[in-house]
Length: 116
Image (tube, rainbow, N blue to C red; front, top):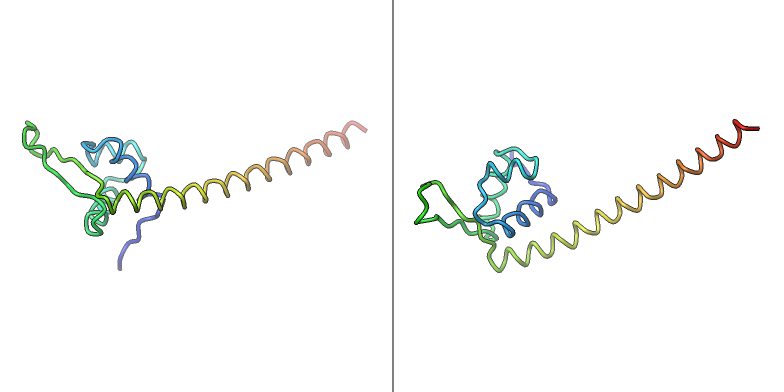
């Protein structure tokens, strides 16, 4: 059985490592609210796809220090994911906006009915 990483998770991980390449998997986990295991799984998948390169900090006193760098293919993939992410979020926003409007109308009607 293979696990599929959600597009939103990949987008958020790629965006975070683009902003802070030296971030640890544990810090990414805490920052994004995702388990360390899923972060590790996602990063390995991104490396396999050629979207992320892993580099060691040679001068780092912490021998486990790594930097995650988006490759040109990774930047292109992140841009694609950004467009789809924005589209999904806008659809969610529109649906939420409609629901709020409907609930507001319902509340007004119930208030008017109760005051009669």
